[in-house]
Image (cartoon, rainbow, N blue to C red; front, side, top):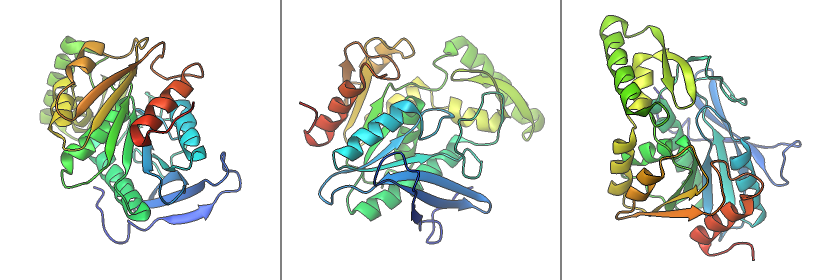
Length: 288
């Protein structure tokens, strides 16, 4: 289990000569013995918002949607931090294959995110803005729901999904029942399940359920129960998301905004549209 303490909260900051964007630096966070998490950080202007951007499921901070947005925001003077969740692997820098043995859980992801978010808030001296892409938005929602005392400026969820969406209600129900049986039979065994885009996802039953539990209903409840503003941004050409569910989230602190012509990844055709949405929501700035 990952815990937050004085030792782990100190990050080692070192300039990286091969950094993609001038001014970025490699950050390191000691998670547990033998496990170090990494992030890229662009220290911006003192009076500009601090932003944490999280990648989607099994991806890294180098994922194009995340990387392009981070560099664009950094170029405008924002303080930007892009961590890569370790998923139980030391200094993970590559996406994790569906067919790998998955030893990580949502609980561990939440603990890592809390460390990064706390550090960014203390380093920048202000509540940060949280941005998540795809299932990264679910992990941010879970982190906030598990740590109600945490103060953030706002949360932006891009192409938001929920766990079990791609499997559908019936398959998810069957998978949940099988995982429950697996726990009763042998809680520590590794078994093949299906999760997100992975048709074969090998993990423990408890690890699997830690993600599947964050289904459409639980994500919706968490977002609506939050106290800081939440904006869901999606492309109206995105075929990977449940648009009806996204629109049902319009309640209390949650607003939903569609970007015309964009797909799930806001590729090169729509990257400036995404930047404008994000920049305007954060500070009223943008291109043009």
